Length: 309
Length: 270
Image 1 (cartoon, rainbow over the protein chains, first blue to last red):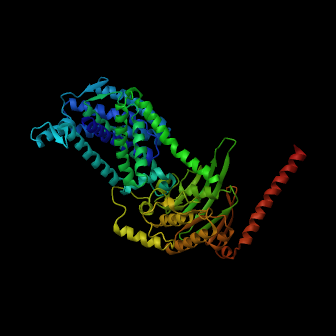
Image 2 (tube, rainbow over the protein chains, first blue to last red):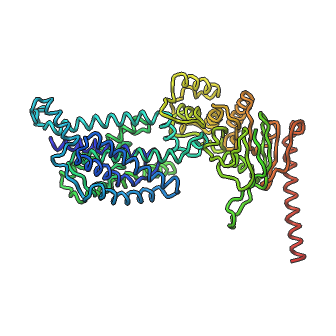
């Protein structure tokens, strides 16, 4: 049971990453690799601040802020200096590797015995349960800590998702979505498309860094390598989410990205349980995204083939 | 209103693909006038529109609009003064957004966009009203994505969007060329109505000799990056499609003469 709760928790934490990837890949069609670096950036900034006694909410917000800065760098490289989007992301991601090492002062930081969002929600939970550390849920023995952490992260994701939904429907948010859709039109309506892209990629990486900060607090450490392959992970979540909701209505696609992240984490947990070697995880993830990307093409080709036959 | 002075533009200068698209074009538009531009392919008529819209900066010359020198203004800044409808029906709207989202974008053309709500009840009511006047039955589909609409419907909406806030200048770049004849007629009728209602200063490129003869109060003909004819007032009103075709024939003949003369000279003297 605790395994299942943990799976859900990580799934929800990484759904913030999925929302970030959703903004860059789906709204702007901007393949933003920066995310690999900003997951770690968020984790290392939050971990370092926590060790120095900063309160967890402030440390998490600071992580979000640094992610925003990283994304703004990528966006600026692309819009002001006309560097290919993919390369812009690779440059910033590479630079972030050194930045992260500097922030942490070593290649990893342990948060053992440090006050984090996880320990905070645990304490609230124990207080709510009047001192019990586990409770009985329809016959299962469930730890209060795990449940409270999951409840907290679900709440945080719901809030963030709602905020994103609201934002994307404001005048600014609509202009942003239109920028990814039709640049010519949005310029003709007086929007500086370059600024929109910088802003959007900044927000996207803010979400990704926040996800990294929460992940570090949940698992109790930050590691310089923890961001590797995260973009693909986020993309897999977004793709699964789209398949789940099957529409491009804004609210549903946001919900889909969150659901996709949780479901994907669940699939991975099951696969690992069945004996998949953790070493193969990234390979399987990449192959999964590859298949998910080409299947629609095959379906379209199949339809055309049938139409001609 | 619009004052184009000695504007030149060369694309790909110094390469084998060098094209002198505009060669010292001068054009002055009075407020409220509707100028039609015709010309052969590659004559620079669309380039002239794009120069005014700010799609690129001109190499030489100045462009003044509504009392301001906009020569070095970027495209998105000029949008404050200019409404545009493109030839391609896909260019003027955002396909994955709904009709009302697109209109809300247009309602802030050239203005700051903040965290305000674009779709207030009063605004949606106005949208329904304006869209119903297009007579396309779109007023009940405001929440549909634009991607599901036909080209004619999109052009009608683009025209509505371009003029939602009264533009100082309306640019129409062959905006019916990609439509079927019936939709084209519909969009032209709508254009006449919109331009007359708001007394818009309009610059319109067209391929249709019929449109060129029947619309607007002034007509200019371009060839090789220059304005070669400028018909105004009574002269413009008397123009018929056949007259315009005759002018094109003249241009064609003059061109052939140039070429054969050059050939003869080359044979005799080179």
